[in-house]
Image 1 (cartoon, rainbow, N blue to C red):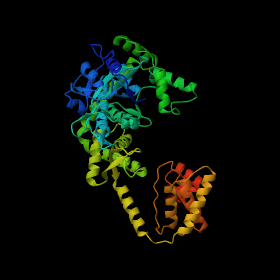
Image 2 (image 1 turned 45 degrees about the horizontal axis):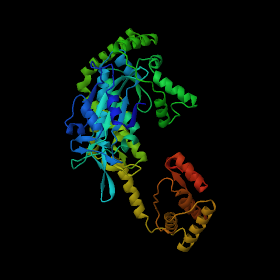
Image 3 (image 1 turned 120 degrees about the vertical axis):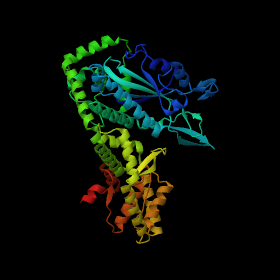
Length: 519
């Protein structure tokens, strides 16, 4: 997987693991760097210091401040989370086998910019006040980033382990434990943002790319055979999935992660020179000869020189492309959500402009769209009610204003479907039928059904969470009552699957709204 999030449970083991041998550096330790505004606040910069890293894993901010709780005479503190970004196989091959070390810098730049977005939009803590717990956005993280170059199968695999330590500074300057839910919820989104930023960096180096699904890509010019030759780890996982009768596309993320852990090999220390020699022999056998490798690098450098000559005249074109990508992304998100997370807009826009513009340019385009009024800031609430920075579109606002006017103009304009007495009888009968099937109504369902049946308003809104049986109780009862009174009932839903559920509940045909409008 391109991005994974895993919780760390043992501070001592984590400290030793991330400083493990790696062939990149001369002193035998993995190249590392402190990242995040929280790290800067603690005076941490440059290479990750082992002593400071170990201390922070244990939650020790200062001599007189330690995060965590005392449990059964022992101190309890979750060390942090490992957010790992892995480069596409072709990038690893061209960096490690072909020797284009510029791609390592491209990977690091993509990692750091993705983490900066995560810090800006996802960093938060939980604060208990007056018996209640609230989520506070902090916008600062303490991150120890370690770069590695091989997989456990000793294939070239450029990846970075980014240890997000369990600490963040609240708005009053106090250090608190991090609230990590967003990291898990948006794991796939963060992976896409990393790929998009890396695709931009790779094209900026002169390489051409072939685009895949979900912002995936590979450097153009490498054959499937050459990629397969350095995918032993992926082959082992796919073999395990095949034994279960599944492919990567069919397996869930949890299944793939479980198999990835089951098939992990023990780490093996091999000198860099031996690894590179073995890789180049394998590449030669797969048709990626030294001549071909040199040619790919030379062609990229040639394109880079040509692009540099055109760069000054292309600024306006890039701005226009970023503006178009943001507009497309916002329109797509706005079709399903009145308000969407700003990170979702970054990811959607980056998907449309993969490799052509950076996330920094997308951020500038979002600001321009705010200035012109095409986008407006809102608070986005996830399915658990956590608040994030969000956006809505001018189109969504206009649509909502139209709906509100229609609702207001339709108040007290119709004769109720049923009288209060008949509505009460209908609800009681529907409730009895449900009871025979083993389903009980609650007071909210009774009240909602009665209110709709006796309303004099043309437009009535009913809001309910998924799984609260509002369709099979409230809506089904209202629809059948209306039909008995001579009304024609039209059932519409936003998606085909929702229309199917609605039609089954009402025992009638249901269409999507788009199909209905088209017809």
